[in-house]
Image 1 (cartoon, rainbow, N blue to C red):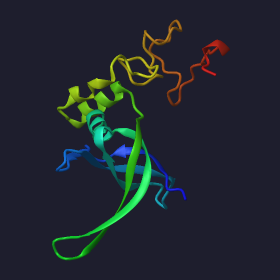
Image 2: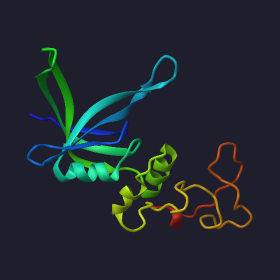
Image 3: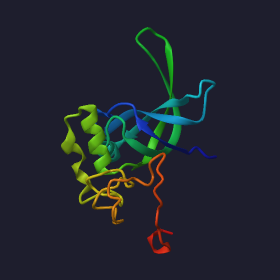
Length: 178
């Protein structure tokens, strides 16, 4: 039997990190995952999926992510139930996360946190080194044209990838990553 779940989405809020009575870390969060199609109005809908992560992975996940972070999680689907204060049976379905991957650079993450007004900027400092994944660290847009990453004479201010751009792109086979 197989019970595997792989999701890519954005956190709807900061991870809620708690500790059990025995000191085990547990983090709970909700992941917004876009659907592959649009509705009748042309809008893309999302599913909001609850997840839980345990132990050291929970602490790391809480330290290196925040609201809006783009992440991939892998785990299993689990259900549980309990009786609430009103005596009603409550059923919960959630993803129990085994592994996760951060899908945005440190620069992107810090810029998003600054836009959200988050004061925990230093919380993301554990990556070490420049983690810009090949883009210019001062600009998270790898296609942004500036004097550092555009060597074509006379076109320092033109973005050849911009809409309605008539600029020609000169790329040799040596410039391609494949």
